Amino acid sequence: MKKQLLILLLILVGFVGFAQENGSGFAVSIGGGLAQPAGRFAGAPVSSVHNNAGNAVTGIAGRLLLQYQLKSKLGFSLSVEGAINSQDEKRFRQIIRNGLGEGFAVKATAKSWKIFKVMPGIYYSFPVSGNSKLQLQPMLSAGICKTAVPAQSYSYSNSSDPLVAGSFSATKRDLPLAFCYQAGAGLHYYVSNKLFLLANLAYFVSNPVDKYSYNVGGNNTTPGTWVPAEKKYSLSSFNALVGVGVRL
Image 1 (cartoon, one colour):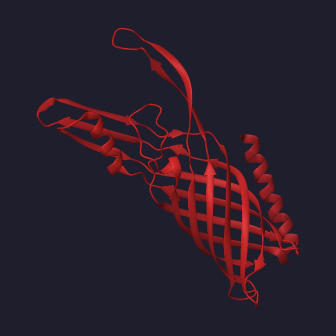
Image 2: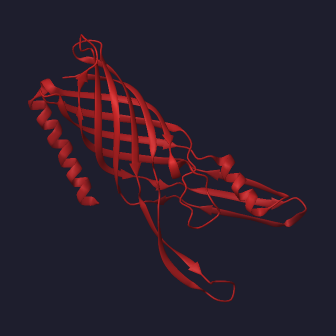
Image 3: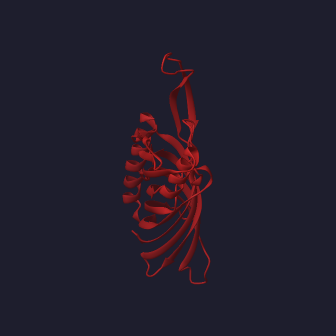
């Protein structure tokens, strides 16, 4: 994935250089809003080493967007985005309690998902009002995404038997760079010839793969066999952003 990062960096440098030479079609904007997880990213965890559910709840998202629009209304974009989604600790705690049975007290913590993405894209801009102040921009983007499986831990005890207690913790585990794509549409309202307000709704998808090993047949007397495996994480989400931009 290092080659992909280098390619994206060269695209960014070329994009900015081209836009500076042809400033009339260049625009830059910033936005922030909500990231609503979908599918397995929002799914409840299970008590298994093979669990790949995100257990994510609604979080926050931000975006820096560079655009260059041709006279034909077709344009090219480069977005740098990030999102933070907390996990549902109450649900995580309940899953552990269900596995232990009645009479157990459980404490659990789970850190947030942090997602970073860089995506070149294309869009088309056309007016939806007579004076062209309001413009609709459908956009398709694809690039790379970086994240890590968040750290989590829990402890349990039994009120009827103080000797029955235990704990578990897992540190943050980095995932490799992964391909991602996003489809969405934005509304731009031009307050002046250069300044505009924006609202954007997009659907994001990425599926990084984690390679790991697990032990089969091991116990206190025999070591068992380590078996290689992999699991795919889903980072699907709907992102709703508002922001401000300027056309140069």
